Length: 585
Ligand code: SF4
Image (tube, rainbow, N blue to C red):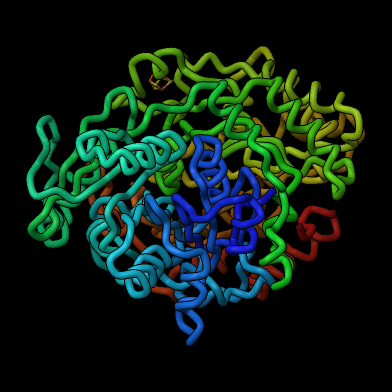
């Protein structure tokens, strides 16, 4: 049974009204991969009546009818831009409008407005005056919760809570906070509400015990002050050690309570064991096929969180630096349930998480005392406290291969090759199993660059580990008589990267990898990452030293073309194609 999207469906459930209405920028796929579906299911399990309006019409003459179609919620509106920040979903790194959207029926990018969170909050207020509290959540709200650099307007924007004129903002992985919030709103308990971890709200004063961050106005005026603010924000992101933060924005304070505690293993299992349909809701199915379903319908999430902390990635800020892994029992049971789905053809499209091979690898110190404030877990080298051991993943994959009805399991999530190399005991065995059973012709890895000073700006391991891993991979595939190859993901125009660095990367690739990679992305300065901070300030935030930043569209394109440019590289590309390396995905 789906969450209702119409009054007829509500009546079918015997509900005469809703406690919570979720508005989302994605179509409604009922899947553990879709945040609105997860939050809706978690709230229903906690006893609330929840409906969903996906990709509401915001502009046509019927817009009022669309947003009104479920009535008004008794407790609150939950608003999310969807699985991707709407500006990233709608615009490329070089300012072109994206034509496709994998989360929209028909695949055409015509349903998710720019700044979707703000647009939806405005839509609600326009048609319901006054109304229940508006609660923001999801990645767009989470990463824009304090003052942040906005690439699309090239300025520091204030908290999206203020821009959307919403009542609360739930950040990070919100299952725990949203249930507490629903309870506090239902009980009209304002004191309890303001103490919920993982939420932001506006306040006239700074609550006791909060650390005051530099004000929004001072961040907007001075790049060094913004850097100081960002360090304070980033350091207070660990549930074990974070303080409450307050930041003055205009005449009020944005208060960010400390992050919610990570879910325990049984709690995370329970979230994934909710009765998802793994389908597009019929209301939206009529509008066309949603491409994202192809990849997520028969995929399994094994864990959440990432301690990679690549500087261009916001996962550590959103999901946390601590990895929590599901139990093997729960994952295997999910695979078994997949085999009962009428559309299942025996293939599990992915078994993984933000980084596939962080499953069940975590530092004991972090679980009790929090992440080290002054050290990173994988950069410049994996920390010895991590006790890297791929054995639980080897056992998990073997157990999944034994599920009757499963023919093939793909590990499509990214792999940290430095973690495999650091596992002297089981790394090679894990790679052997991947190569033999879980790679479909090509294995994706993300070195992102090869020039040492660019890798240092990215927080990524050196090119020596890439070469060692390639050697190990080649030996494994040869030994097993397989025709498999590595696909490399690279970033052009990252802060610190010049055309000459891209030329260095090109020479490295031709000489050491025997090919020119095709997967080259131009760096997008998404909100709330250290790389975005470098992009805005032109300084390395860890040393204070100036750092080159390519800001022109032509300059960014040129960096990419040094690797992918058709004319310049045609000859090499043809040669490599003949050797079978540059296959298209
Ligand atoms: S001890 Fe090492 S692995 Fe543990 S949190 Fe600190 S840096 Fe990370």
